[in-house]
Length: 377
Ligand code: DAV
Image (cartoon, rainbow, N blue to C red; front, side):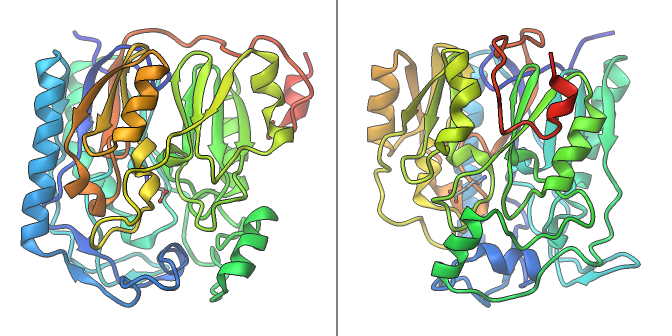
């Protein structure tokens, strides 16, 4: 039988990947977690319902551009099976008027070696999104005897949010104090908050992932060092992949408006990792009906340590990648941004060559460690 699933980081040579689909996508109704994410002055406040068909068609055409670029380079591409996302959902603990999409697989699926785990998202509308990937998981399970098919189910959403409206100023103070909408009652995490670097996991603490999740990760993966990172300049911290993006061992681009605080850099500095500012975005506004910021400019897909796919209109980011020694493949994807993100978000790793390595062998006092007592070496 074949080896289908293997990936330990975001830069080893990519051989197989899932690319999302925009079909039936919905702008979900307001709920505690989503209302915190939509900026107070956004036209999307209060808006919900099926996304206009013309935007779905444009989004899917963009994703086809990506599929083509990947297949031309020999990468096997798998696609999810969209549900009728405008159905209402419920569990014993909550009801919600609709689901959302299966466009950003990166938010839902976390690949850790031979395991793919479906996340415990903070948005109730995303509770059943994993089902779009279940036909693929079943296929991998049948074909790959080592594949581990996992879902963390222990969340009820009963007491998971502070339900408050706050100003932008208050929000920045809260972000700096790491005081977010999610409570710590249960582990909650989006897979796109987890940056995998072999033996080390760097997880962003923000609107979509809480501290309890990090502790849960450290217990679930006792062989991995789990680090909590946060980026105080971001008033809506959601997902690490438009903020802190590794290109290859030793090199990370960091959003210049969301810098990693000095004290959290020790582990990178001790191991000669370079953290450089990402280039400015080419656009001053996100596209229509888009929740994400203009910093999707840096949300790239690394195909191997020398090759990266960057969005075609993001000329400054392309230039920077070139200067950093990367070969750039431009792909027109901006029309898919509104469905949940850029090139990294639109994909989920299935297979990258390579094994689980330690990229941080030099140990220093590291305030990001979630359970420092486990790593007194
Ligand atoms: O900057 O709005 C978007 C990340 C989507 N996965 C941002 C973060």
